[in-house]
Structure formats: structure tokens, C-alpha cells
Amino acid sequence: MVNRTLYGLKQAPRAWFDKLSDFLLQLGFFSSLADPSLFICHSNHGVLILILYVDDMVVTGDNPQRIQWLISQLSTQFSMKDLGFLHHFLGIEVHKIGTDLFLNQHRPDLSSSVNYVCQFLQAPIVANFQLVKRILRYLQGTVELGLRITSDSSLDLYGFSDANWAGCPTTRRSTSGYCTFLGSNCISWSAKKQPTVARSSAEAKYKAMASTAAELTWISTLL
Image (cartoon, rainbow, N blue to C red; front, side, top):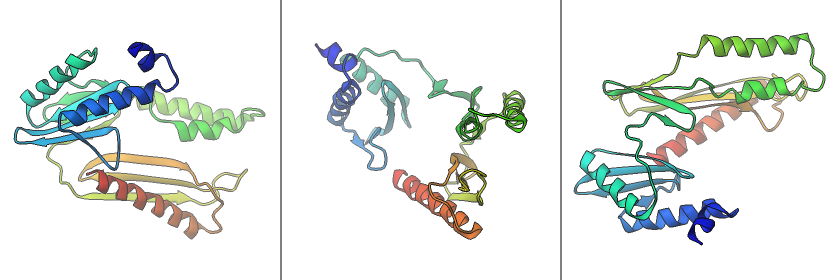
């Protein structure tokens, strides 16, 4: 019955999350107000952080013995497999270089570009095929690129934003883009079409700045 509740029904993800979160709360964790899937535990033994995505989780902290204790506690209640140091999570590959981390994707986030070319799927022209070839050339030329997360960076939080005006010739909507940094580390980014039509380039840029400010506010709450 438990297996069916956790894996066989539409509400299975919620049942699984409730069961796991209740167990973590019993161990002294609390859920972040900014992200309910982030659990944090402060104690005299150090800090433990657990991030959960469906049935995949990442555990980290400042005390290796404390991390092993958490893994053993979880293993007593759930069928788990410890995969060791983080290598792969949500499509992102993680490589450890000294005290730094290198993140990369062999199929990077191209949702904005792919969404744009898919708008002409019904009646494509030569220019649309050229855009698709450009995406493929980008993939071929950036396979080995990624983000390096340095451990000696500062904790200053800031971001950059920009927007084009009426970039879509069909809907005349603009595209917002931003990236945020924690010191020298890029930690979040976005590029997507604005929900409404901007009447000027200034309005388009203000909308991009508003999205960036909201992201920085959320990150500040998370931290």
C-alpha cells in the first residue's frame, strides 16, 4: 500500500514529499521559506543542507561525519542509493577541480532559441532553417564550455539585465534577459519573451530590470 501511495497514484509526488519532509523535520531540519524543497539544519556539529527534486537529492554541509550521519538516518526509513560526490543533477554535470566546481551541459538550456524557431514550424522559410543551423553550430562549438564555481569568491550579490525592443516581428513583444552573480560566480540567468507589448525601449528595459530585481530579492531571501 505504501509503495502504491508513493509511486502509483497522481498524488504520489506530494505523498512522497510529505513523508520525507516530516522525517527531516523530526531530525531538526526546517524548510526554507524561499524554496520549500530546501531543508537546512543548524546544530553544534555544523550545518547540513539538503535540496530535493522529486526523488533526487543533494546533501552538503561543513562536517563530513554529519553528512554521513544524515545519509544513514535516511537509509533507515527509505530505500536509497548513495552515489557519492555530486556528478550529475537535473541534467547538469558537476566536475570537481581542486576546491572549485565546474558545471556544464552537453544539451544546454536552449528553450528560448528553440521556442523562437518553433513559431515558424508550420510554414518555415530559408531564414528559419538558417536559424536552426546556427543553433546546431552553437551546440557543436560549446560542448566543452561551462561555469566554474570558485570557492574563494566574495559574497557580494549583484545582477545584469537587458532587453531588446519588439524583437518578435509577429507579436512585437520584447525579450528580457538577466544574469545574477554571487561574487564572481554566475548563479542564475533567464532569457524569455515579455508577457505584454512594451510601448518603448525604456519600458522594455524597465520590465527586464523588474524581473532582475525580483530574482535578486528571491536569492537574498534564500541566502
